[in-house]
Length: 391
Image (tube, one colour):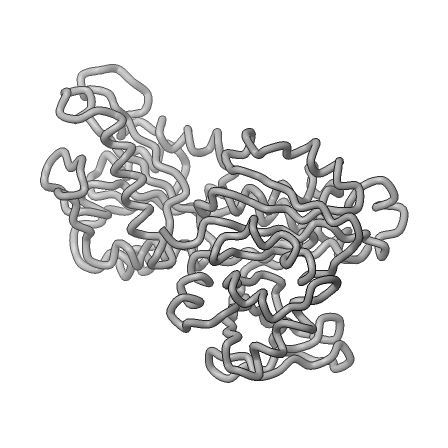
């Protein structure tokens, strides 16, 4: 099933932000109208993570009272409370029994928009004990740079050099077993664990180019107020299902009938890698005709994501019309109801979104909803989509 747990480091004092964090933990500061931590939880949820462990300390009750057990976010949330600061490594030793065998780590004061599933795929393929998401910046002085040779990280430089380079993006995949190299008490992943792994060629890195939003200092916190709004108003790719993602044998409703079209999985992954939201909008008259149930259809949707995730891909949400063609509903294409349902639940940049269908009714629905629509008939779906997308 792949990776299912994320750990968010949210226990710091945030002293560099002064009065802003006097009564509020840094990850809970208001950014773009809501606590910054909300954006991290939202992003993890849409990638299919099922549980989050938050390491908390300073004003921990603010975080706990807000997120509780995660019911309102569709994800299970647990907490490890640091009574005294343990560093980015020490908390993991104390919380060892709460960790999965492999888990994702995020800093609670930064948002690095990358394909988490691709990072995990690289991690598994390399057989690394830890893998870091890296990013290119124009000036490494504040962060320190990373020296990498192909996949393997060779060294880290101090925060004194200036100029462009690759930095640690603060997002990691870690194998729980590697924590045995840390001593109990205060320790650091970056200073105590990663150098050991580097020396043994067991620390991998992958460079990503997604948006990076940091609220750690006042200047970047102020910048984040505008950046977060632009980031959340994402472009989206809408796919019809039968005839586009899979071969249309007629009323496909179980995995034994399902055959991916050429390039379909690669097309979805390309969308994920480039920061697009991915939605399925599909007419499913077979439900109204009694050929299969909504539950059967939804189980197939779950199975599709189970196939996609190990390949570094995922679909954010499935939208379907279960009505008979003779019914006067608003959601059956060529009407735009399904697409408008997406607009109601997600913040979408319509001008930079695309629907890929195989019928004129798909394009008509896209036109009515105010987005670009194209008709796919055959060939490699990824190549077709890229060549027909007006960015």
